[in-house]
Image (cartoon, rainbow, N blue to C red; front, side):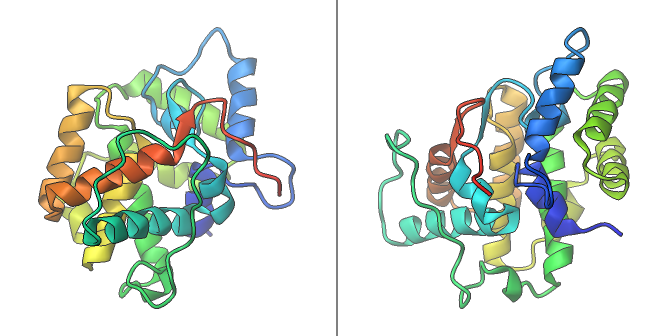
Length: 243
């Protein structure tokens, strides 16, 4: 049976229970095993599993777990926005502290009106939609991704779910409808921005369209941008999880 919370943890690089490595580590090993057939930059596994170039989530978010990390980042961005702070223009010199969202706020998973599991799957779908935004995931890329997911040990049910989502056409109406509260709308956008660094017009355009459809103010989006940027480092330099 598919475990949405574990899947989200795996995609953000959290530790696999009972092992000494992360999904990202195993996917990295897969790349070493297939250097002659690497994933193209921007392909889903490269983006979500950290096997390609670019930036990845730091240890603080990894240690919290996917759901708490996304909620914590969204809550932090919201708090800074409400306080009238200016978004930070550059990431801090040291890794910023990241806390889970308080239990008495709408950002906490227990407050999800549709249930934690259903909203977690919505966040995973948001990440996949963002990863497909540049349009580079064709049939050949999907096959490479499927092969890497098998090597990453993410599990048969998770593989099946991810590949089905990957092959589905973008349905922004359904995705946006999956966020039932203002807090969830911000979390959905935060998860999308965590997945990609908008280096192309298509990616930037997708995030702008998503923010507009979610009804997020520009100033709040700027705070998400600053908060997520501070939580990501160049791939390969993030500290590994100690547990």
